[in-house]
Every structure is written in structure tokens, then in C-alpha cells.
Length: 254
Image (tube, rainbow, N blue to C red):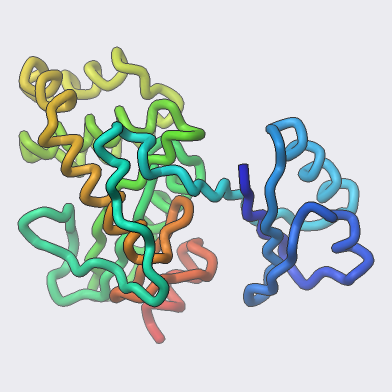
């Protein structure tokens, strides 16, 4: 598995020598280490080394290269990412969008089981409340099924809820209760939201819902920019900076 590890500040050559399996890329006020590790034990060893060197860990993000083909065999035909591609424009008839129609736009490619997507969920919520005039926000699915076994089922639950006009309510529940995404949990959330549970159960296993998720995954891969979650776009341009509320507000008010 390949990882992207973000560390605050610039690292000297001597410190970088402690991470021979990674290449270093400066990114603003951070150093990004990118490399492959054989297993979770190796990752924990790297994180322990970061702690021992008194470095400030900002984020650890798996870089999945196998989202294609992981959701279902029919996903094998997703187009290969193209250099210089752009984010697919919003389709108001398909995308899940909320907020001010004329506001600045944030699009997130996210994974309901990803802890970093959950953090982005909280930070974007702060931005929505704090920015004068408001924003538009759209969420697109990018379940990393290789590392998050419940992510696809959670996305399907959100889409099944959308068929009953309750996408955003289910979206909120899934992030608030990220540690409980088993099938029984998802059915309980549908009941809690007052959905027709039989229809919900039927829809979330149907081809229509899976194809809807597939559409988001395809668009993320085709953009050439979505390599993990969360990936954010602001007004169509990928945002590679931090996604804490302060950084997003700064980017939105430039």
C-alpha cells in the first residue's frame, strides 16, 4: 500500500534520511512523504519514528490505485485518468448539492469510513456557518474499498436515502456514527430517519444505486486529481492545501 504522510515544516536531509522508503515533496508549510509500505506494522513503525523525532504529524492518507474494479466487476472499465483533466462539472439533476446557488463551490470526493473525510465533514460544516453569504457544497462518493470494508455499503445507504429525498440527513448520520456502519446499523439509521425501510433495503442493493456511486468514482479518477479521500475542489480547481476551516475560509475569500 502506498501512503502520503504530511509533516509540518521543512525537513532537513538528515531527518529525511530516517525515511528511506519515502520520497519527500515540499507542500506549502508542510513536507509530504510518499512511498510504499508492506503492511500496517511497517506504517506504525514509521509513525513511531515521526514521534521519536518530535515531528508534527499532520495527516496520513492511503493512496489507492485500485478503486477501479473494487466496487464490482463492472467497474473494471472505468477510464484511465488523463493528465491535465478537470473536475466534471456539477449536474444539478444528479449531484447532491446544498447551499447558496450563487456561492463559492466546494466539491468533496469522500469516503464515509475515512477518518479524514469525517474531519473534512466537520470543517466544511464550520465554513458553511461562518462564511458571510454562504457557499455551495457538493459531495461525491469515492469509497476506498481496498481499506474500508464498509465504505461502499455506506455510500449505497446514502444513495438509497436520496431516492426518498433524505440524502443529507443520511450523510450526516453516517459521518456522526462512522464507527457503526454494519448492515444492521444502516437499516437502523433508515428507520430512524423515517424511511420506507423495505424500499431502502431493496434500493441500496440495486443496480441503480451502484451505478450512481460508479458515476462519482469514474469522475474522480478521470479528473486525474482524486487519489485519496478527502479530495476537495474549490470552484472546479483542486485544493491541495489543508482542509481545516481557517484554511478553507482563506481560500474561499481570496
